Amino acid sequence: MGYSVITPPPAPPPLLHPKPKPNALYLTRRSLLLSSASLTLLNPPPSSAASPPQPDTTITDRVFMDFSLCPTFFRWSSEQPVLCPDPVPLGRLVLGLYGHHVPITVANFKAMVTSAAYKGTTVHKLFPGQYFLAGHQGDKPGDVRRPTGLIARNTETVDPKAFELIHSRPGLLSLSLSENDDDDEIKLDPDYRNVEFSITTGPGPCPQLDYKNIVFGSVLEGLDVVTAIAAIPTYRPSERIQQFNDFAEFIGDDRAMQARALWNKPLKTVYISDCGELKVAKPSLSPPSLP
Image (cartoon, rainbow, N blue to C red; front, side, top):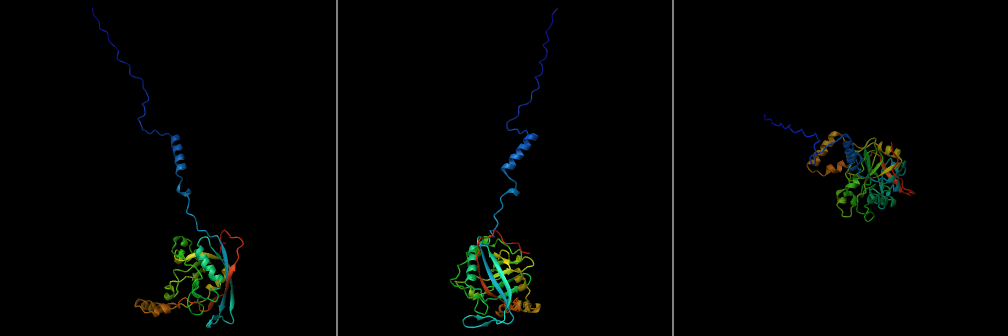
């Protein structure tokens, strides 16, 4: 009687963990934490990124300007203006200058002050609640004599970095470029130097001057004098006169500009009765906070 041998089937292979495929990514909670920490170290968040340097407002120089009020007007001689016989002193402004930020602008202004070029000149424009202007060049009483050879050509007027400071509060001193109203004949002179300046009077900022005028200093003492000047009434034409003036300018009538030169003029003569430099023993890091 024959028989056959039955071969049992082969046992299944043991279960093994499959080998990871090349370049396969297996993340655990620990690996996620480690990877995020390393990414933070390699790429710091934007908040910790280095911010651009702020303009240097170190006060390197101090000058003073004494302002007086003349109830009448200037009388003019062939040599120099004869100031009014009975001036009313308004007080002294002490101005701190940012010589590190705009050295040429500061050096020119300081030269005008120390040479007394501003002495006897008037505040020729006053914009209520905003700023006043002084340093107008011309040949009339109260104008600044042309500073030929006195100061250098100011290349900072075309440097974007010079316009970084804004007119954010009262008592800021700036070189007047946008509101400069020197005569065109004077401006076209190859030796022309801009010396007209403005001081903000408050109570708020003057954004219309931002990035147009060069802020180069601030009032350290005498903000009450600025307030007193700002309170002087000015000539403000009626709306109808302004419309006539706009039309005259549109048709090219030269008298329009002459008439407009009277707008915003103080109705009392305010002038710089004296000016000079105050020696700084040690430059301060920043100007004091003003109200």
